[in-house]
Length: 372
Image 1 (cartoon, rainbow, N blue to C red):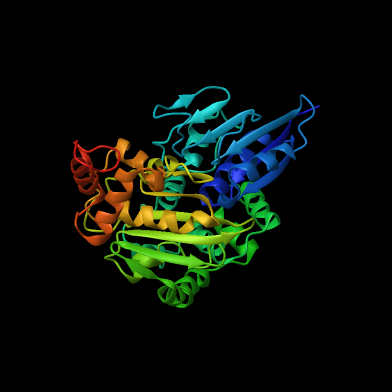
Image 2: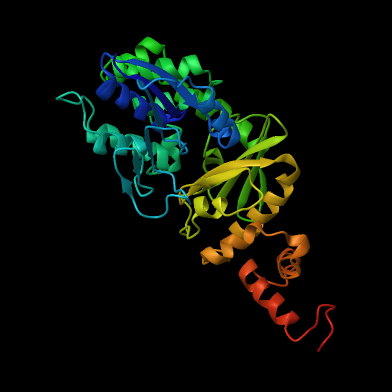
């Protein structure tokens, strides 16, 4: 009996292409089942998803692409920074991990030995996947005007309500058509008008939902993907960071944080690492310039406060040690509580300076705040 490939993949362009490459190059005549995984399903929900996959025989082979690690997997390929995996690449028969790779699809193509002699996709094709997943567009206008087939597909995925059947069909058609994307789009009945509608209709709706706090744009939306990604930077180029908050089930909130790559000043904060160090999050992480996670609704405003303080001007030199401070219990940490108050009142220009002043103000005092 041949393998039964259980292929779990992230439900974005990178995850879809990663799954299509794996399906095209490595499954051949074997049985397979596809499992799209949403960003909102990380943590306990993902563990339950894997638990429900029927892995009972030696023929069952669990592959996880562009998503978080699970101990049951036979092969895991990802490029998101992981605290447990560390900073160095890991390449072996079970794990292919490199957070410096611009996409997981690039890792699938590069490190998995193909079962076929000729692969139909080129470096140019993978370059576009890299650009989309890292938002490494030449200008923000490209997001809302580029009609490359992968950009059309990206716009369609953003505008539609996700369904497992739809995402699996895209993976299968991309593989079956040997990555001839024009044919795939034709069969999916998708055209350039998808990109046009994204620009004309959805951007205006985004503008109405934006709230500006310093260098941050904050959007609260009823569901993930209600507004097109990066629309904040298209509407208001002077915004440095964008925060999205989306209600999901079980009193949880899915959030996304992204840096405006077209901003005049460089981002020096590793957003993924910052988020992975916040103790009260259900899950959090990502890349240097973009990240996300899940937070309980009761911690929503606390998260916004922390992001507003640590991502506004003056925090570009924040160290890893200072990042860890984001997740502390401010109510029981007088230094952190006082520092946050200083930033909010303007008596300190940023959180780093505020912490220094707060420490200096308490030096030489006993627990009751009196001089020794």
